[in-house]
Length: 381
Image (cartoon, rainbow, N blue to C red; front, side):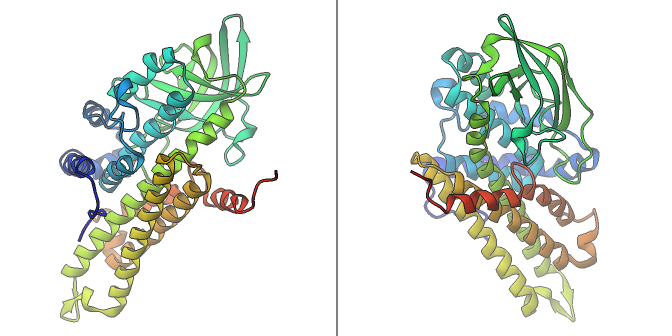
């Protein structure tokens, strides 16, 4: 069966898909189960992806990136997610949020100093917005940024920071006297204290930590964009991030479907393969249809982005539908595998665990529904 929408791909897109798929097959898939068991963050593999250009897919060539359109980026991300969603989220957060914020709001000097090495894979970046008491209500964050002469001093705690213990740079959202700001924080700065890696249900090859900022001093040029505009920058970048989460969900669901199709062709009951039973056929048909629909919704939103249109509603639609598709499809996969589906020796239970967080992070399904509903009404003139 086709694993991506092959019809209509440009030559560049086909080459990117083939390169990513081959890398995933040789460097990620053979180790994914072990990384999951041991919570291993494969920095060597991320560095290889960086050297191949996969940490700069969305960055223009003038800053050392590949300059790919958003759909091509999503095609590559889907291949990574189908091999291991933990690797995909490491790449996705780096590419979608910090890179987008720097590209849109960074100064020429900031782009040269930080965006260029991010695009080339020399620097891995993460993002820190959520706090123990500021999840869905992200604007309630309490991490403080105090101006001290020509420096900023950051104090506070962040929760669930992707790449927070392994990145070279973090984009951190903090509150100054004037409002919420965004800062570029080197992780070797004195006072930057990442916690131990969280023992997560899924995405165990992705590094997730709490971070404490103990009076981290930053030069003035570490402020990204304008003071008090950071929350808006973050929300803007999260639209792009949600397309990445949608695509991670598609990759997870697609892989669960592929395993299910293969298993149902091999597994026999009552002297025939279970794929011959109508109940099984109906499950597989619904799984395949939902995967295709989720991918199409994400790609449609990506096309809107590349045309310069607002994508807030459509990114939320894609993220909502794809994440719930991933959860539903992986649940059906476990059911089709029966008792084997519940065993760690078989692949679908990992996919089930990886799928769940796509309904939670970068905005829960409930928050996505609120965003979609809000956008249905025209804004007041």
